[in-house]
Length: 182
Image 1 (cartoon, rainbow, N blue to C red):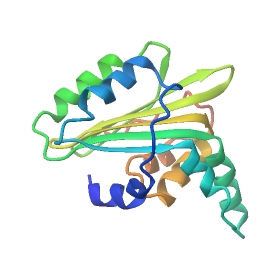
Image 2 (cartoon, rainbow, N blue to C red):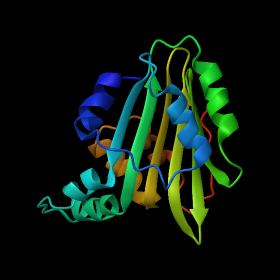
Image 3 (spheres, rainbow, N blue to C red):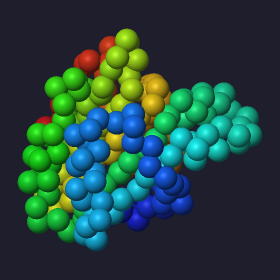
Image 4 (cartoon, rainbow, N blue to C red):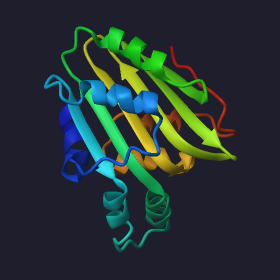
């Protein structure tokens, strides 16, 4: 995992926390490690996402992405590089995910495992959660608001958010389908 790429894409957007839309268990996990200097933490508020919507774009696909961004309320990332305990952190993070989250996709790529889960209510996705670990790195990402999965991987690519581009591997169709790469 390239933390420089992640940091270049979103470090400038570190803003105040918008956690009231998130699960208490997930918020507690972030809180548990936020002051630990071994972890990198990035928080992007809805205000920052709102600033993107003021950009002038010419391409129709960019307008679609800006529309999707405007509905996002926040992004939180916590990551640890050179982590000997990456697999333990992965298991701990998975164990705290509430039962109302549905697994969307699992990706195993070489030594990296990634799980994508969603929280859905009334047919709308309110949170996308990604938990990933390799042999020596760990990352947990929470994107919350009104989420359009079809556009999230493009948003992740444009903002250089590691992991979100993996969503392009989903087979086209219903949100509940899973694709496993082993």
